[in-house]
Amino acid sequence: MQHLGLGPTDLPQVLVPVLASFRQEFGEPAVVVRSPGRVNLIGEHTDYNHGFVLPAAVDRGIVMAVRARSDRRYVLHALDLDRRLEGDLMQLAPHPERWPNYLLGVLDQLQKAGKSVGGFELVYGGDLPIGAGMSSSAALECGLAFALNELFDLGLDRLTMAKLSQAAEHSFVGVKCGIMDQMASLMSQKDHVMMLDCQDLSCRFVPFRSQVKIFLCDTQVERALAESGYNQRRSQCEAGVALLRKHAPDVQSLRDVSLELLEAHRAEFDPIIYRRCRYVIEENLRVIAACAALESEDLPAFGRLMNQSQQGLSKAYQVSCPELDLLAEAAAALPGVLGARMMGAGFGGCTINLVQAGQEEAFVQGMAPAFAKIGKTPKIHSCAPHGGTERL
Image (cartoon, rainbow, N blue to C red; front, side):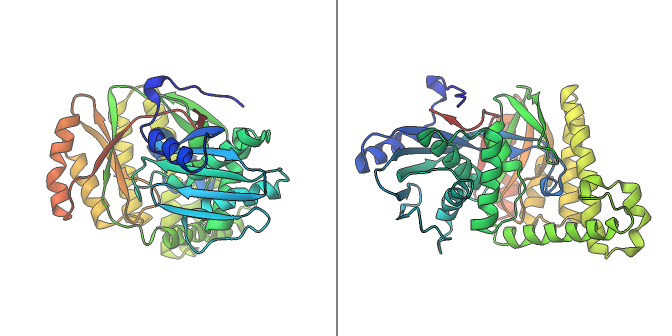
């Protein structure tokens, strides 16, 4: 396995309680892994449509400590939730509680892939804000796949682990997610963003300039509609593809659809399906343009594309909410803010904001009135692009 390497100043603070808990319960861990959350600068709801995205792993995530057992049992301890689960590796099934399913799904997929996983003990904790849309789920899945790959020498590469983790979420959690989150968590490079083609999973890395900072503004709105809304949008996009395939048999996903083809058959579309499809096609074009702007260091152009993405997500794809709209609109009006939009599945969670270096304090202070309007205490997180899942 490739070890990306951490300097002593890079060690996450959450490592201390995870190690302390593990040593108290089980003794010394054999493997300790850091698995990051992610942000997505632009390209929302395009991944499951085989389009383009521009994510980056960040310097917040999950740390897990693990060691092997002599039997065929697993012990899972979620430190932050103060929850614990034990079971038999030969009797895996979705659990009524949500948190174990991200882990159990990975075990299920490893077994289906014919990998020999023995019993183990695991403690994990993290510093990802809960419900903020930074994909703690992928961090958990990828972290376990990576840790068990190290512990039992399974011989998996990072791409295989990403696909396996995505399948785990599909089967045990019931969210038909795209593969962006898992790819970003496993494959990212420090100080870069990943231009990922979700059709063939090819990616290239674009330097992220230090003169711009990433801030997340947390609406603190529970994303109660996120899963049902997400799966509904996916079905709507599939319906649009099915209609267009009658006219263009080569169309496999919205990635294969041009605006011209969509417009030529607009009259046949339900208006809502049409809006969903048009948003995805336009968002793919925005990602390509945004990547070019970042490479040429045209940060104002990049920010304008982020703002256009927010309008599309809010009005055409309809996955925003009043709180997200208000925070994004307020941020875009502040000096030094290049772009602002909602991030993630939607219906709550965070906005992502690109702020020019030197304007950080002004941004934090400037957002206070907007938080007051939505009746929330300001909750603002800063983060930076970081490397992917790694052994500590």
